[in-house]
Length: 593
Image (tube, rainbow, N blue to C red; front, side):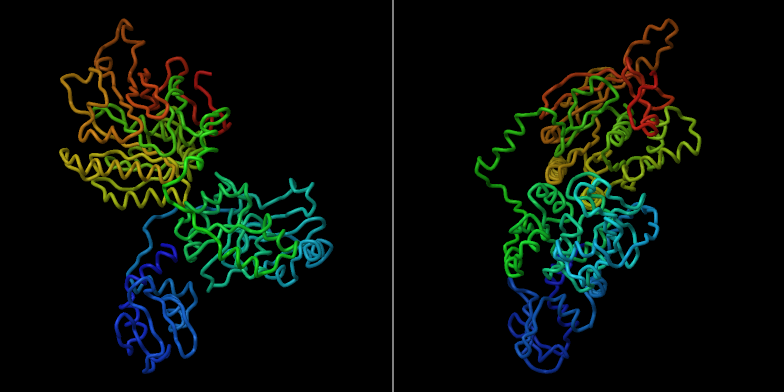
């Protein structure tokens, strides 16, 4: 829970809070009145108990004022961090019980630096930083470059050796294997409730010089691994009520992605008069002008009503697809190139019970990770080791896998596959919360829910099923993620008969609301035959039926062979994919090559 959300909880419980903090006061109308912060009799200190200003207070004798968190801090003589902990305990708020992967980072070696020199003079005379600022951020100096320490909780976790000349910037070095986090934590006071995030260490120091607590992203604004700091700094960032994002024009798209993960309810975009804080500093922009830009900072508007000209650039981009690939297509069959799975979609995966849906989706998970994405699996019908071992078999291309190979595969998958560890009927609200958390903190873009039958609906609860799938589509659209939902097909007189989206159990809205419907038809007749003459050798072991594809439009069937030794479905012309080879060589390969 971030600070903004905690303050909302305080506002919702304003009367209980003031009774706890100022028990000698009295309620007069919609205000709690008392003499002062020491609890003496009187009416000069008033706290609003209702209305739009609920929680705001002012002592008219001393001109002190603030909100309920300020009141809690002042009466208990606590810092913001201390107050957050005690307020959470008072309100009975427990931290979310998600256990993030405990990463191990290399500890950086101490670097020998100088405390002065031409490099320091460069920062003072050309970049206009003061000696006090440089000391606050613990900047060091080497011939021709700056030593920028990344310090968290008083511990050095990384550093950057930054050349002062632009032509040498490609020689920038960081500690190998060290943590990627925001720069500047050493300058942040425990009582700060608002923070600025900008694009460079010198910019963070310049913002500090303007009087704003500031941090810098480690490698510039961007996507993918450039945003690993969000996961690593998540807990520290929860304490801030407001997060200002001050990035140049190219960084604005990244700023919006950052805001979506950190929470648009507390992120504001600051538009500076020049490219960045340091340019403002060098051009002599005064603090009053910067203060005005902060007052004009805007939240990212989640509104929906826009004029058509708002979409001009997006339409042009949409109609020019040259070199553009925002979708994901599995690679373990040549025809899967016709299956394009886009962000913001829900894909229904259907089939008879025992048709191989889970095995197919585990291969999808492995393939997704091999293509550089993160995925979260909520398999509610089996314990995690049961289905995760299928991924191990698929990656190793065999069932008998040596322990060292298992460790190697798990190391590769660690940080890319997350598991919702629950078996049985699920609390849907908790599931959605976990999915949102996985996306916002860890950057997960793909989710598997296996299956609808474990989501707490009766077979004839059509309205409940509709609302659930509708909620999934909303989640997918709001966060730009792709969700696979497993459903079962109605039984037929023969499992060999063709199936379609009309055979899905439950509400018709399930397939209506989904962007894609794919069905798995297992060739059980082939499995039952004793194929002495090789009659069935070239028959497909499984047929994947694409019965709906809203964005791309292609529909059809794809024949797959199946290797029970490694649990892989594969193209008969290519053979199973050697994912372990990809692990070692970072490239795809067929095991037949």
